[in-house]
Length: 299
Image 1 (cartoon, rainbow, N blue to C red):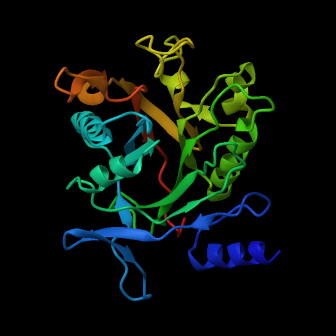
Image 2 (image 1 turned 180 degrees about the vertical axis):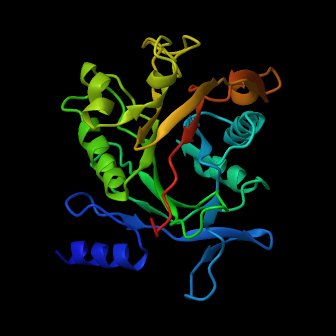
């Protein structure tokens, strides 16, 4: 009960609507990049950074599983980010399986400037996984209609439990995440859904979500994992973008490329040999998302 009271107070204080009958979040500190370092930002009520964005009714999101267990994490994450850069203006990036070394390389990228305030709804998981939740507050892009209220879009980055283990926890995990979207009014759940059981096929629709890929490419399997035949399991569309009260307008797949990785193979002189490997075992996906802007408060 005390935990629920604390969550309700934090929800009110941070103006973050939260569901009342599900997993309480663990609020995270907001970090900004300032004077060549990442620092924790604490609002004093007077000085708030510009966290309200102005987008013209749409934004582009990319989600990608980095593959935390692979060797040479820094070169892999660098290659992955280069591919993301080539897609054009990207507003939101979801990454899964980011190791500590990969995170270090990620935070050193000069074009990654800030992280929005976020919380982690603790999901029931056999793998110790949480969902990362962030509220995006958008100003109206129109200057011709005054007094429009800001639009709130909730973003949830997930890596649902792996493997065909019964009973599966993925239905419960996605249900918890969906409750966070419905409380906010609109939002996105994206990431690695690990759909490896027959019951996973209807999981998105059972939670009243829109599968963006199936809307845009209904006749394309859109495989994002196992494409190169490196796994014993067949190719699958693990990586998804699902929407609640939002509309997909375009979507595509981001392919991997080869990087040098120093593995276990040794030369005659005793040095590790460089191998050419794909920088991830997953393809990434990008999605253009649009919405209807709120009407003016006076209407």
